[in-house]
Length: 81
Image (tube, rainbow, N blue to C red; front, side):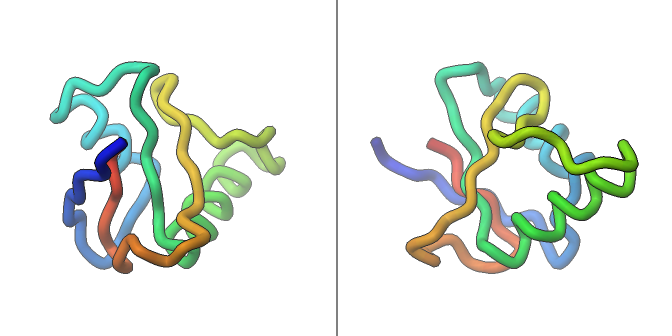
């Protein structure tokens, strides 16, 4: 499946990811891929928000968020599959 890139900026956050899901009209057939650094930032944000580490897979609005272990997704960018 082809990955489309969406530049967000320096601060990838849960809210920014929610906005991407809404803006692009994504559904459960899609996945969001994050640079490992951005993924860790989102994990920490969610842990602080809910005061616990959430279950993997990480999701936002029903869309799975995955870490790009191949490091093809640039920092500050979301890959959409």
